[in-house]
Structure formats: structure tokens, C-alpha cells
Amino acid sequence: MSNIINIQEPKPRKHKRISRKKRVIIIAIVVIVFAGGVISGWFFVSYQLAVQRENNSKELIKLFDDADKLVNTGKTDQAIAAYDVLIKKTNNTDQKASLLLNKATLYKQNKNYDKALTIAKEAESYSPKNSSVAGYIAQTYAEKGDKKNAIIYYKKAISLVDKTSPMSGSDITDYQNMIKSLGGTI
Image (cartoon, rainbow, N blue to C red; front, side):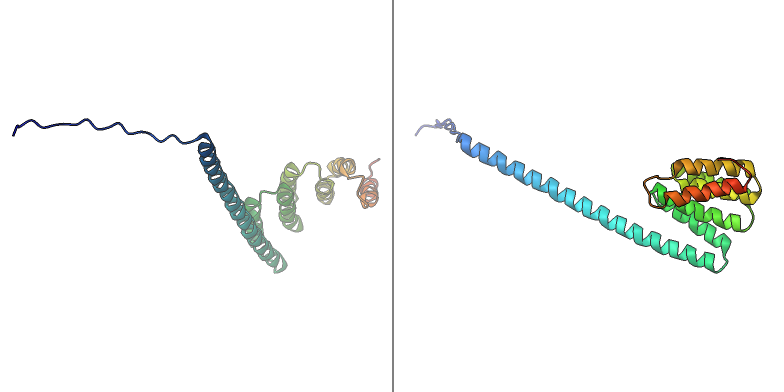
């Protein structure tokens, strides 16, 4: 017997070629699975955002109710603090403007017209084309005794009234009457 070891080279493996049709099917399956994952993820994120919006809305409604109760019980300072929280929590500019006017009203009721005007003008920055905001500022100036600025803001309110609104005629008439009562001309 000989000590020679017979080493055989391994036979090269034949790679199975995947037919073109099978490759297309595999690629299609991968794309479908990927697209399904993306769509599922999108639906999940959309659902989560909707739930978050609903929870935020419920929270805002509760906070607003709490602020309203504070106003009705004469707890002005606490109501102002509650409005501050609401203003920070909402992203809707019209809601911010409305909440700021609610807050300004609390200052105006206490005859703190300068603070009320500062807050009302902040509301105006969020809703600059809102005739009601301009009318509120005009009314506050009038209550303060500043006829000149009251007339300026009543005229601004008239220019901002939505002429397509069914109430536009009475709003314009009200603002014009206020201008006349302050000694101004239209």
C-alpha cells in the first residue's frame, strides 16, 4: 500500500439559473411586501395622529370648560392662567385669536385697557383679516376714551368685513354707527 493520498478536486457546483420569469415574480413579491409595509406604516402613523388630535381636542375642550368655570366664578387670575395654557396648546391661529380675546376681555372688565389692547393686538397678529378682532380693538379704544384710535379700528373693521356673509350688512352698519357716535366721519 502506498502512502499516497488521492486528493480529488471538488467538482464545481452548477449554479441553478433562475429563469427570468421567476426573477420577475420574486422582485414583484418583494416590492409588494415592501409597499404593504409602507402602506401599513402610513395607516398606523395616520391613525396615531388622529388619536393624538382627538385626545388633544378632548384636552382642549376640558381646559376651555375649566377656564369658563373660573370666569363664571370670578376667579379672574386663574382664568387668565387657564387661557394662557390653552393658547400655548392650540396650533390653530383662529382659536389662538379667539382665546386671546377671551383673555383680553378679563382685563377689559377690570378696566385694564392697556393690557387688554396689548393682548387684543396679539390676537390681531394671529388673525389679521378678522373684522371681529379689529372691532374688538376699536371697542376697547372707545371704552378707554381714545376716540381717534377707536375710529381708525372701526374703519379697519369695516374694510375687513366679509361682504359675502349674510351678516355683513348689519356688521358694517354697526361699525358705521359707532364711528358716528364717536364724532367721526365715514
